[in-house]
Image (cartoon, rainbow, N blue to C red; front, top):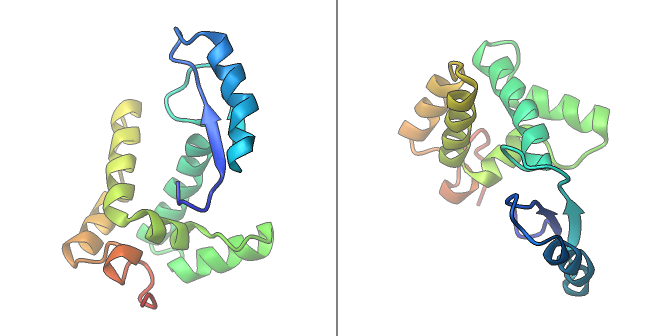
Length: 141
């Protein structure tokens, strides 16, 4: 998560003493963090699972030539009244990291990562996102 995100998801390993989770739920707000309890073990935290679906479909829409990243982001910002949009967020995370995560989820699901060629091309060009000064957008300084 970017450092300015204050949410923390707490998930047991299945062997975690429930009192540890309770303690963290009580203590984390003292550090300006917002704890969220994950109620059952999961491959991926709550946000990551929801974000994975948004990210996957956003990438496919662009990889298939249906829209450009700016189109997707503009529509997302308008509909959800959000300053954070899929392609800007991916640029913040880093496209190399996005590719690794997408490959991992696809491997677990036993499906092909259809957006991999597009991401691999960006990465081959050195366009990793904010950390390289260019990703889906090239206006980073």
